Length: 154
Image (cartoon, rainbow, N blue to C red; front, side, top):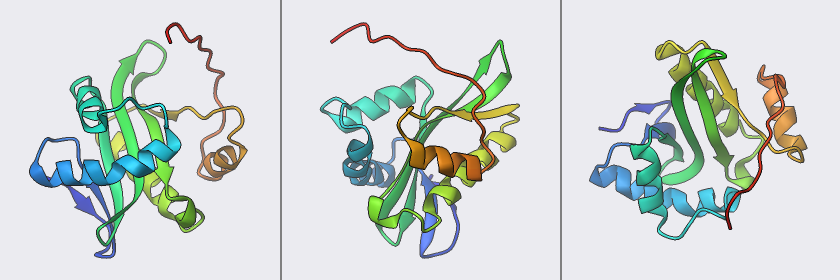
């Protein structure tokens, strides 16, 4: 069953469980998610279900019946910080940015982390995402480390 929070006009729905209603929201989220992550492979719903099977979870922020924001996250243990909630993706419609949606989703994710007993709430942001960095600083998320990566295939 989807968990809903917020007002009637705006609500956050967890869509990780494979239900008919959640499949509808997942399909509705695809276009917005692809704007942010254009390299997600074809077969979006199958790819996301594979991620869910590996522990990822997803929530959508709805205004009425429109998907206006997405959060993809996972909880896991690390040797550095114990249990953490890591936010893979936080996406809002470009036209809705600076209207509080990203902040609402971010606060919802932090509350989810606290409810699960996480010691840390973390995310990564690309080096050139200065607008996102400003947003994260404003919401109490300073830069705590550098991430390093190397593409191995493709």
